[in-house]
Length: 461
Picture (tube, helix red, strand yellow):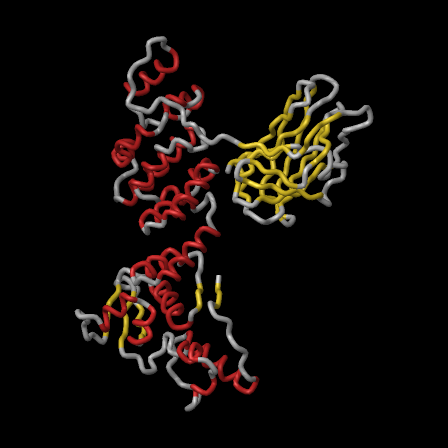
């Protein structure tokens, strides 16, 4: 992401080439001035000030940035830096200011420090996914709040199940409660994806504990167990320990007992946790007794199932009906477009079933944004002949961003006629979420805003 806080004014054509050449030299920390009167090439003080970015010209301080073996020497100008940061002001002009020509900063990465300098000198925010966390650290350290806020916004925008656990750890470190809350939203709703991500194995022990004890984690407990086992193996490597069962237990410590093993399905426990070697023989026996005995033994493990998340249902029709000549399915697509005003996670669709008694349907459901498939699943559901809706789920909930239209589609295969919706609404208020509907060009079986299939969106908010 690169954005100008203030829009640039266009330069005269005669100066454009010289400006472009100097800008390239400036990026490369090339200190050759292209013309004696370079100031005349830039009409605003902002642009003239930006020339000093990463430039030895008139520099009165230098920074040696980065850890030993990976340092970079960068020029600075005390006045410009002091105007942009209260920390630099205190460093150069405060009561305890030190008159040093070179300042070592081993705890900040050079690209992050350069990104901060670019903001201070040029009023430009230039962030990248691989350096944004380091830039946030630099912005926090030197109290550059607008840059820090931009980093947080960037992280929130790019937040997904793949990086949510790592960002949760960092958001707590940087004391960013809004980002922390967003991370929890993603981790709760897409828990299994988050737990299976590579990033989960990189979190610190405190974050691991907070995730394992999370009541609203929407995941099977066997997935939680396997994720903890993977984290323990990686932690052994970080501590330079052999990844033995004993060492895995050692690094997990008391966090092991936050895994709600007694709430697993018996098959999951017998074929997974019980044979992992992580549990002692006594623990394994006691948990088997917990499943089968009338008098259950006391366990160190939490034995209450997680509450998870309660799915919400957005119903878009005011009534339903059936007729002798519809709603038929011959491999055609029923589709509708929708948009929400808040970020949600679509877990599945509610579909109508047979109007002629009990029947089974095969359903291929799909969720797209601008033609790109975000989620799909093929499953079967059994309808009992009533006008109720029947849920069909995606393998994992799909994150939906606000104010963008998505396409929900289903291709049904079934011999029986089904119910269909009538008196459809273009806008539905579902809790705190407003959902808008519009017709989809993908729909070839008659479904639209006013009537048809896909009566419900099932989501977490």
